[in-house]
Amino acid sequence: MPAGPCCLVIFGAAGDLTKRLVVPSLYNLARAKLLPAGFAVVGVDLADQDSDAWSKSLEAMSRQFVQGTGGASQFDQDVWNWLSSRMYYLRGDLNDPASYENLKSKLSALDSDHQTGGNYLFYLAIADRFFGPVVEHLGQSGLAGEENGQWRRVVVEKPFGHDLASAKALNRQILAVLDETQIYRIDHFLGKETVQNIMMFRFASGLFEPLWNRDRIDHVQITAAETVGVEKRGKFYEKTGALRDMIPNHVFQLMAMTAMEAPNSLSADAVRSEKAKVIEAIRICSVQDVPCSAVRGQYGAGRIADQPVLGYRDEADVAAESNMETYAAMKLSIDNWRWSGVPFYIRTGKRLSQRRTHIAIRFKETPAALLRDTHAQNPLPNWLLLRIQPDEGIAIEFGAKIPGPAMKLGDVRMDFKYQDYFGTAPATGYETLIYDVMIGDATLFQRADNIEAGWRAVQPVLDYWAANAPGDLPNYAAGSFGPQAADDLLQQDGRAWRAIV
Image 1 (cartoon, rainbow, N blue to C red):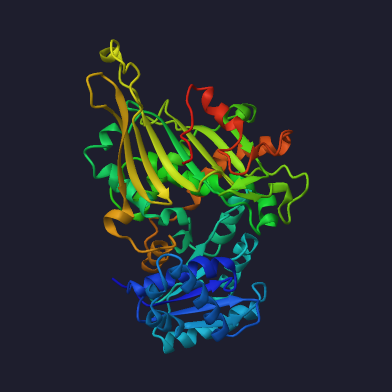
Image 2: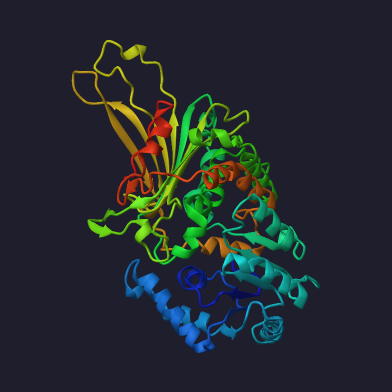
């Protein structure tokens, strides 16, 4: 059903995030009839343009998104016209109090013109250095206050801090203005259907939940691999790197969904509390132990899709001798009853052979005594694969006897794909998340304690890497599976990564 009346304010309205993800998501929500009749959008940015120019530039990007996923006939002009008739642009400086007074006046007018009910959703699609100041300005202008049943909610994009100290400081800064219930720290991975289905797959299944523990699972691998490089984000990446960019947020959220205990309900607080327990249970390694539990890499020149690509140090706005990692892998232990002794191996990297995000669960092998006198002495491994992107779905891999007189085993794969089974429409992954903010469902968003627990788990690695410059970068070619050190990380335990294919 449609969300209740509200006005969405996008700070950073002329930015890439707004064009590529936020507005196409609004188009998809409008097409699905999930936006309310009492709805408006206000874009705020420093760029000098009017509402009509802003709307037209966003239409082109939304049309391109739809056409790129199935043909021009899919773009519904009537839906776009409905949405664009509710879109307004305000030129404003995020550091200027007058901009917030102008915004306040505009919102008051829209409450009347579009019957938005005085409910405001502020989306911070801006550089992270502005998160705290914008929230403070919202408080000082009176825009953050909730009264007379009208709500105020703020969506904060990543990165939420750059280490544990900065994450704590940012939490203190925004919680001085907003209540935790007003803050929606967004992670677009959690908008993926496969991620949302993990809880149902586990807790609503009498088949898999009894196996989901240290007695049956040997180890878990979580991979977030990209074929793209840093593109035009060299300045950002030089300050961030692969670990900060992906692991404390995206990857840890996937791990939390995989490893959490069953909540006592599907309420936001119940689900988020169980996820937080997982992150808090990650064993914090000492700085001295980092070389045995974490590795980094940086891509050199290579080939992607048979096309030559530059090495990281040759990208725009990257230092010629940069030691920033574009690949990070870690071995983690979760110290609780369910997962004690089960290693979680995580990896993320740019310019790898394929774009793949998946959770791979390796089950323990059965005793092979039954097969000792056959040609199938080594049972094939059993895997459960949760594919997050692309080609979302779930696969199970196991061994089966190959037809014939000899006892030989072959790999069998049972594969479920969302697109094949449900015929899902193209989506950015933000639709569910934006809709959830509008209806006040915080289940898929991170709390302050969850954010800080994630940074606490990786802080020793950040400290060690800051104090010890690598001497072998770049150490993997673009288009490869990553650095040899990542393979060594698992080989020391007698295991190996699944190929990124």
